[in-house]
Length: 75
Image (cartoon, rainbow, N blue to C red; front, side, top):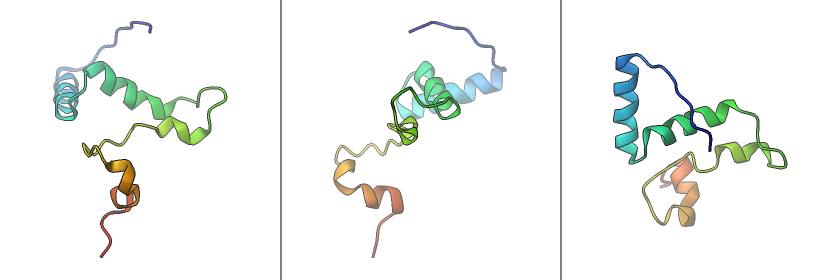
């Protein structure tokens, strides 16, 4: 990885830190995830792969009932 530096307003920094904490990830990971949809897909990867791992439900079994996770519970 390459280390870089960015400048944020105090309120942006505080909000980003709070969101990262809420998600249980580092600020750096939050920023990487935020940037990922803006970048072109990696060579050889299908375009939809840029969205891989962007949804976190906290459910260890989410892959078993992905339709419910994505579309909501069906009656």
